[in-house]
Image 1 (cartoon, rainbow, N blue to C red):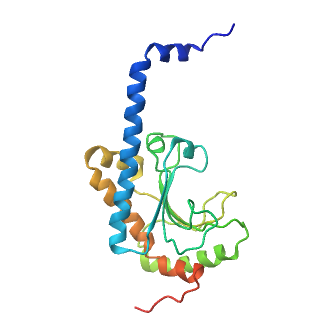
Image 2 (cartoon, rainbow, N blue to C red):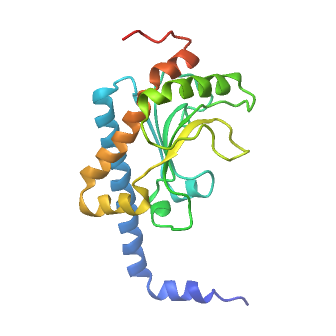
Image 3 (cartoon, one colour):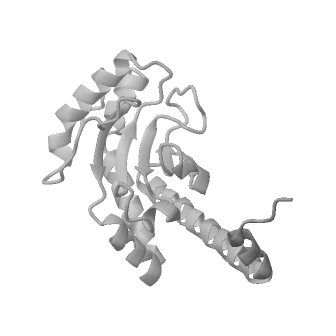
Length: 207
């Protein structure tokens, strides 16, 4: 007859404490998710059209393409309501922030399309590139990620705060973390007229 693995036996002997730790971790994840809701409220003060927020912060999300938070407009067409076209903060779960071996958190504009050969991807990338010099200064940006499985990333950059900086904000002052996320989303939100021009076929308004 098979017996439990040693690690399982070790855990069972400490089950009560393990349950307390599990509850604490769940509480921390819920509180962490709430910070992105606060960041979204902050963003909407300047960009009210950015009215959609989708959180993908569970540990299971890390096993796929990484944990992500999506800020979007409900008027932008998308084949997947919970993974819409929009501004994404990627690699941002607590599991990823505390893991040194994973890529640093990034901000990007992602076009939701079920077609890899979607013509809008190249059009959007070209128009973003034309607009970028007016929005970015010395920030290093790229137009697509080195990922053959997903060519729908149209612009991205690594968050300069890095994992250590973000974790320090969480430890010292949650509001500084909220402000940091809102700042990056707000920066990419400046491209919304360009995105409207491609997705909604609107001409950009003149200043």
